[in-house]
Length: 183
Image (cartoon, rainbow, N blue to C red):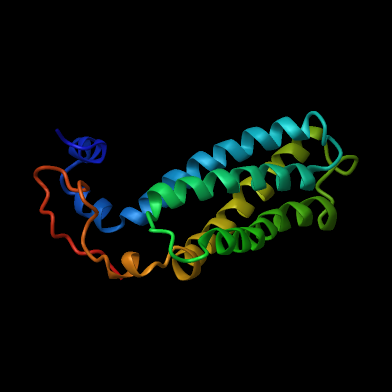
């Protein structure tokens, strides 16, 4: 019986499969990140319109911290699959603390340096500016930093470094199983 990954890959156009297999960690990281982006957005909006209505930077920080915990669990178990020999949780949360700072800087600049807030602009424009600066720009820059830092310092067990071929069960039945991973 094919694995869930094989079933998904079987539905992908044949010319795209080698790319997905070759860059599987990045694809998995982006899938986890997309889910955590949605989670962050929902929590941020809920906090901004309830208990943290006058503290948008704090709302985004709390939302990002919650999504970071979820991200750790998913990245460790699925995207990077390590054996846990290194103190990765501590390193993950240290990298994530820096990334949270990177994530909220554009929002803080938008709100307080560029005055993209009420009474200088309307409430709708303020929310659009908050979303674009905090959720889009901040998340994108933090994502680039996280992916680089996670591969460099966090999920680097000897087993992961020695692993050069595709993960077991990762190729669709018509895919060769010896597609090497790019360094």
